[in-house]
Image (cartoon, rainbow, N blue to C red; front, side, top):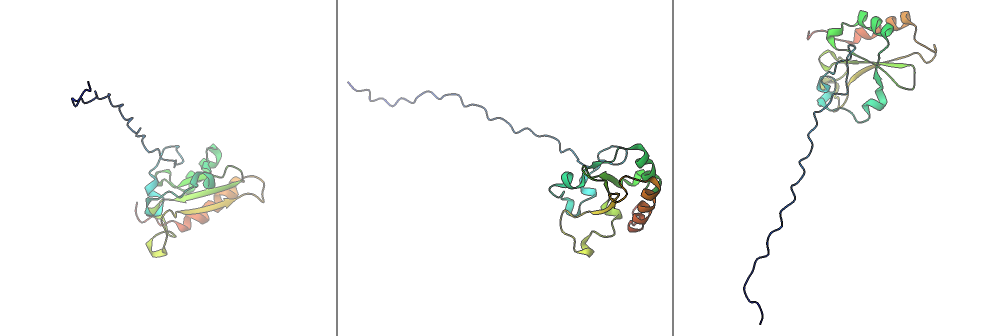
Length: 147
């Protein structure tokens, strides 16, 4: 005899779905005090360009260079000082609120940021007086109207 009752098979317990791990967005930008700063303050459209770390390097951590930098730029203005990892090239990155070369009036595209390169490739290494002179020239491209 054939079983004609409609039996519903027992349901197997569903395996719980793993919840995606939500990690806090860690800022890749550090000021001269080594503290994280908001990326939206530096990039047009609040978009970090891909490859930023590879192109711009890491924050400068040499105390003698930071001392010169902090004499030219006030640390509380959060102007960034970076060094490329493989060259004697330094970058000064200006917050958007002080930028003169990035913005809607310059038809900037998302991800652009105001940076100034200082090279010591020809000199072989950094000369502190030369660094100070080069930083003071950059200071002319910063508008401190939003302090």
